[in-house]
Image (cartoon, rainbow, N blue to C red; front, top):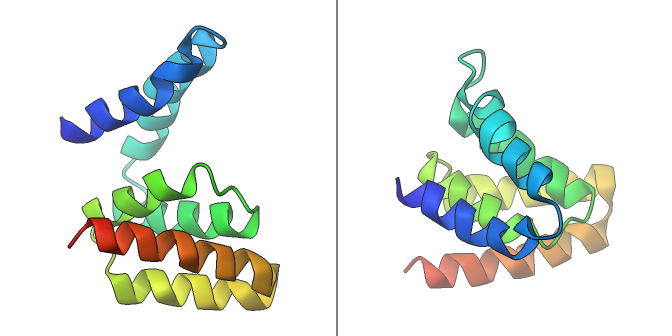
Length: 109
């Protein structure tokens, strides 16, 4: 899968430092948690994007924004997530997320 290749490429830089973390990310997080049927992948993307914005996790946000598109989120929905989170987690984190999302949107044209 193309998504697995992207994920592996993103994790390669830390594999020599934390190989078990990479293994758990691939096998447990994406191999099990993301595959559970109780929530759709679209819903999991929505939740993950909101959490990353709220926690100001800018390094992981681009990957998950792109994954959100792959899982069916629209630009408008991502914009709404960013706007909604501003009221709960703060304006600065949402402005930062909007800047990152703009770059991802431009790359996806």
